Image 1 (cartoon, rainbow over the protein chains, first blue to last red):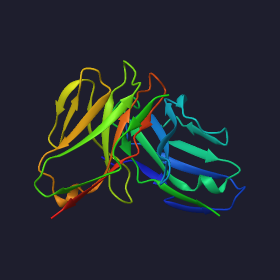
Image 2 (spheres, helix red, strand yellow):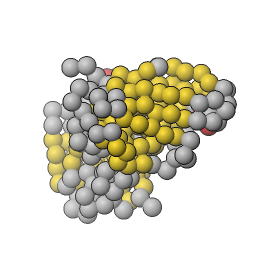
Image 3 (cartoon, rainbow over the protein chains, first blue to last red):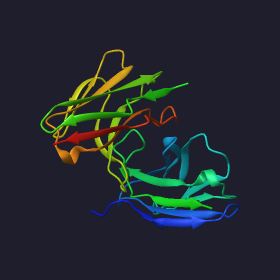
Length: 113
Length: 110
């Protein structure tokens, strides 16, 4: 079966702009989680969606938001980009949630200049 | 504040057994402990998950003591292809706190 896909794979934005990242989970998976990965902070949890509802949220400012559609595809939005938002953004899907086996996508590399 | 701590790096040689230990400060009663492997330019990949005692699958073993304040990932007879970053994860959606360790870079030498 097809794995988790993320688009785009690479993105360059300017400070102050906004960005939308997309994630298509494995077919049948209803949980999608988003993570930010940086060399300094490692893997940090952003939020989890399950059946179109945000079920958990990490400690990120309100500029970071997301949503999930009825087909379980998910989008993540970051508004008013800051230089510190440069990171690899990973999404992961699973059948039941974060404490289940998660399948990660390859990530979107965001660079903010 | 819950925290997950693991060594930054480890070196090993082909054919050796490697044990990576992670400490799980304030892990909640319902939390599972999970380990992931990550290669460069790829997302993490699930290795193994457990709640207590010992779990074994085809690639690794996971040891969790009774107090559950630590876990040890055991990789038997590593090869060069096991060179990667290994992350421990303590937390579950019940607590709403999913906490990854900082990752252990394992370098396997010939």
